[in-house]
Length: 455
Ligand code: ATP
Ligand code: MG
Image 1: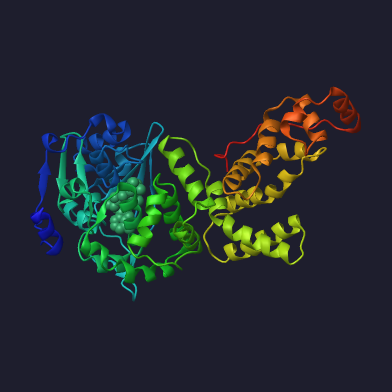
Image 2: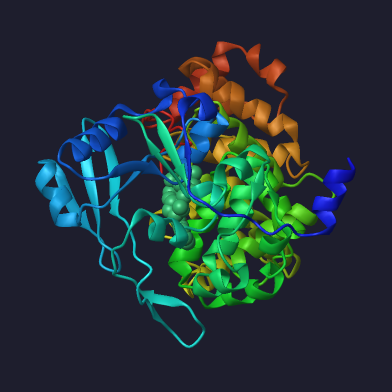
């Protein structure tokens, strides 16, 4: 206890020396390593090069988490790697890497980065970085100690230059080198600190935490596409809600990106809201290995904004559908001003929103038309979220739940008697159905409902 307190009060000087950890120390379950990663490392070593699994994969293996992807680092140059693997290609300009395809898997192979001169702008931001180096230099260039471990599956050894193994054990996120300088070089490391501490439940060390609040302002100057990518990684980490809590805990203020602002506003709200609710669903689905839709989640994140604009327009006299369309196009103008949201996601979001007022139309041919929409299923799932927040009556969702699964005759009955409780409609006489059928000129087309996974 006293020792713990002492360590907390007095930052300890970190003694750094290269450590080699054997199986008896790390106990990595070889079965959790992908076949492709093992094969790439083995083939490179057989060709006479050094090769290791690196980065997040080693960290996750040590934590008993199944890694998302496997990266390999080697002293072979990209051209040399290309020669070893027939199915491979060199990609990237700022720093070349090689994609090696093994069966259905792609392994990213990177040549050790050097400590040589990098090109920086006036804020200390790295602009160009093309030098190769040794494994030790490569480790120095990585962000956190837990991400700088090198695992050799052939000899079952881990090489650790920065005490990463102990930090993982202690669940500590520690920046390699001088934290303030490392955030200046690349401010996105702040978002990585937020995500990794949230996802792994790691405590951010004092030195790593201290410069974050001030350096976070620099994120505003990052290319929006890169910020958007990082926000996506955060939302789909399977731990989105704890990542959101980390923003506040680590002192990353708002106004970095409009999507982050929307997320932070939602996280601060005491009441459950559509954002927290949809992130809870997303976290649960990802942890159960189910698919999730980016467009759907983004539609939820920005819904409070759209909804607010929609209500305002209705208050000033616009009719519901026109008001919603107006609200969406207002937001779209903002989004196109550089939020980095790719067009395909923006389209899905818009479709989900536009369909919302159409659920009120339950008479005649209109419910059939809505059911045949490609985005029906996603819009219906979105409606369920709105019901949970009291924006819409439960009765409406119940009606649509019955309608979409009912046979054709029941559907016709329901559409002719909409407005009556579901129970009653189920007992409708078939005379009414016959009358409705005569009126209808063409048979409604029924499309397969789309799962929310499809964009
Ligand atoms: P994830 O579980 O999300 O894949 P990860 O740590 O593997 O987490 P990647 O983006 O796959 O993240 O990066 C692979 C490795 O590259 C990291 O573990 C880290 O060593 C290094 N890295 C990534 N981004 C940076 C950065 N901005 N600065 C320094 N090193 C980085
Ligand atoms: Mg990774």
